[in-house]
Image 1: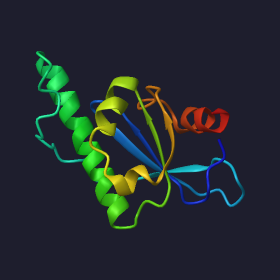
Image 2: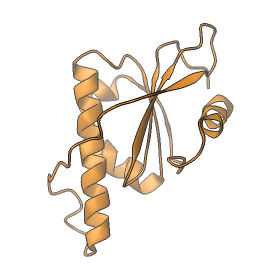
Image 3: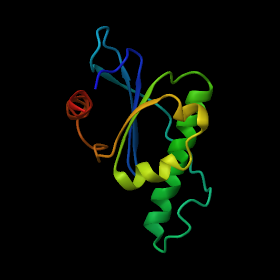
Length: 128
């Protein structure tokens, strides 16, 4: 996958979120990690169909991550977005993506790379 310069990459699971910015001047992938405030719990009732507490917490974190990305999209911080997340968390986040954000998503990768090094994340995207 070739990323436009300035693309935001969000890598998340049910517990963590990392943001990256593509700084490559030529088409390609050159990611720099962005320090961002962690999303606040949404307590939106996501995951109510599940019976275990850990799934409720993970679904709540996924909803909060989507809300955080929605805010960044609506305030103009995100121009293009690639989301990398385990399949379950990605599915939960999709339920909460704002229409504005959906229009800026140029790629979704259903892989759990939240605890992988930056080089592995960049390779995953470049090879997609």
